[in-house]
Image 1 (cartoon, rainbow, N blue to C red):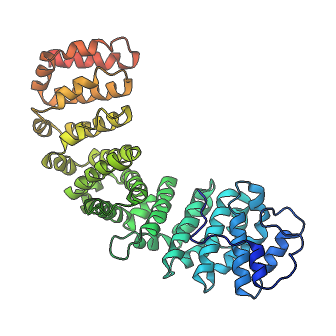
Image 2 (cartoon, rainbow, N blue to C red; image 1 turned 30 degrees about the vertical axis):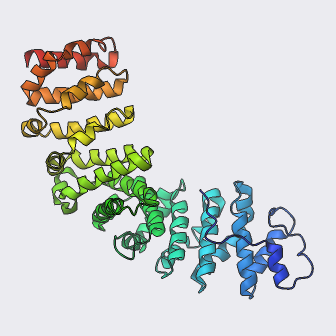
Image 3 (cartoon, rainbow, N blue to C red; image 1 turned 90 degrees about the horizontal axis):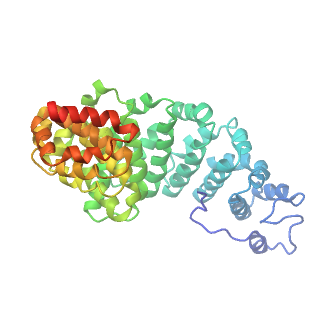
Length: 422
């Protein structure tokens, strides 16, 4: 989504009027850059030595940058090198405007990106990240996030970014504390998300402490929910949860135990606080939170223990009826717990788990039923009394309705054999 920045655009003609231009400028129109010489005139004003005129010319370019037509972005090409140069200026308002304009042009035009990359847009952005002005940092995060979404980003942009100081500063700006700014954190969290998804060098992100930073951010978000200080929180929660989920998959199984922050039961508690928040305020984010819980518990007996110790199984089971997607994710988390062995299964028994699983077997969704079958197979393997209870509660009859489904047939036969013969 393109941004207008914090200031509204003033009509270019009004700016010229303020500066006592009695006649309209020849061949120029703010809403069309196709008239002969119009962009040349605008660039001339942008590069003049009159600060107010420069600012209004930049605002006009900013307005043009909102066009969805790539031809308009490419018509602005002559101005982009000047916008890049002005990032090293002294006016924070002017720098902010240049950053938002560049961000809008970057996302729309490959030609703009091709011109700016060799001119050093990554080092220029790296210099901006040391600005003391919050508005500049937020605009920088926006421009950078647009750049990182380019199709050529993994090959041509992200390696340069990782070679600069941007990553270290981004992680610093995402550190919880009194100086944390929501708008800035949101923009850089999305930047981090695009970097992680590129898989260019996630080992470098891990070595720079991205995982503990994200874990602390998760705790901060949960704390904000508990303090009822949650206005706009979902804007930050979404990229933070995605970053943490995706980065967890990059951690070797044998190294999970070394991640001190991820052995803390507060992480699991924080996920459940956010799940409740999503349920009330932004249900579309529930799958994101459950995917994170799945990745946290997949290779961590410690966090599986935390789920049991904090009595979070019942709240988890309550999410099952919400949708097929959510059901599958809840069942995967439960599989993560059960597969840890008999001791974990014993802590789930007796309880509501079996009756909830029997309810899922009456559904027509093949993926949900398949995930339930996998969970039951593990449960019967480690807990023979669960298989006996399954038989007593007409479990075999529940399986019969799915016997004609090719995708499930083998798993149903295997589960029947396990339930009957152990």
